[in-house]
Length: 236
Image (cartoon, rainbow, N blue to C red):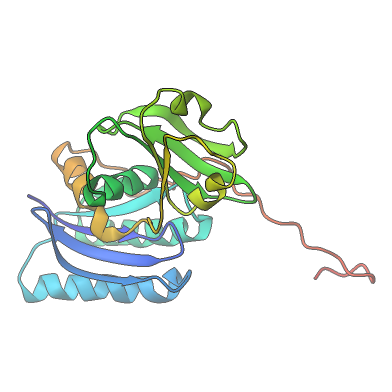
């Protein structure tokens, strides 16, 4: 199995994990806010120092490429690109929604195999970035931005199977979705230690992204907020 440095900065956390053969060899993570710019390089150094001390050669760098925080995704991908180029190893891009689904698959007990997994990344107001997967991570609903209302996921819920909602956008969904087969799982967030299955699968398939020209998967274009003006016509 490959030795992979996994980087996750798509949400309000920063995490890095050195993994091999389905195991976490070293990792660092911070859950206290969007501190990616301040912490990421130190976390990467910690894992690379561990690898050097154990004389472990890195085979690839994997990074979560979205959807998620515009700033966080840019920071993570820039760091990953620089590492992959400097170390002359391939770069792997991990879909953040699949990452969230994998975490639920590996941590939730009593799954029967016909559940539908609905990851939700918080966007503005009542909007989320979302999709739906079956147990094989085959899409039942394509990735999209979605403004939540009482009719959201109607076609998915009408299948009659248990639908698992999770991610930092699921709290908003809980306020408008009342179906009996809807289950909301709290405290699911993207972390580097949960990237193992997806990054190792991508490496085995030689499914790499371009080190120079790859970009984050935003789903929607970034929209900057126009500065407000005070009574004197000055930007504030």
